[in-house]
Length: 259
Image 1: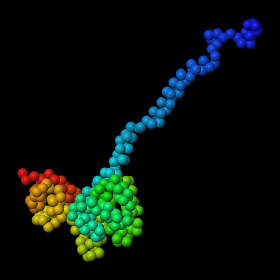
Image 2: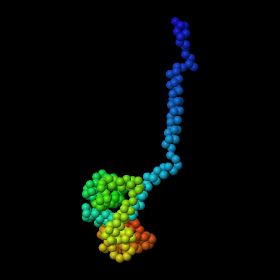
Image 3: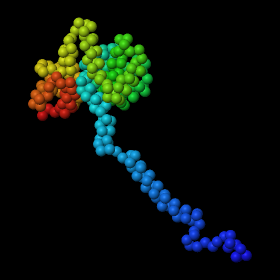
Image 4: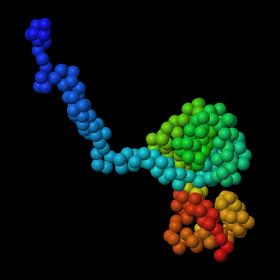
């Protein structure tokens, strides 16, 4: 019997291991080779080129930088003169920047703009640029140049997201057009609206409100602050007609001391 069986089933030797056993021993090595090849291909697939991370970071920051640059050209009186209809819906809107920012929801309600669009504008543009864009939207709607204010504001937000928004240009153009229609100021005079007065009292100007809003309490005499600011700006060669002079003056007021 054993002889007969051995004819059909030869005895296995140590060199003749079953296929399954050979396969099981070979598989870890194969898996290791596959893993190595996948890791190599994966590292090649996700390997970044020199400088690519820096370029990506620059591209990400570029829209915000563009918004910041444009904001330097925007002052409260410029918004007031370009968008006077805002005061129709919020009479106290132009008392200060904080008062103007607080009118956002009220203006959106008056124009039928979805609050979600307004929140998106704040998130993308920041509060100051968002309220300036909303003011432009409100004024153009009342002038009959914008039929769908919500869609128009959303378009401005998208431009801001792409770094292509220039609200200051719209404001200067609208202010100039408004004065031209009334036979009023020239473009040069419109630009002077944002300049700090080189001399004289600021008691009856918007600059007094900047002192009241930003200087520590009790509020100092505005003319004293103005005179000190002129001297300080001159010592640092700061141009009183520069586009961001209002923000510079506000920062000076926040650090005000009598000493």
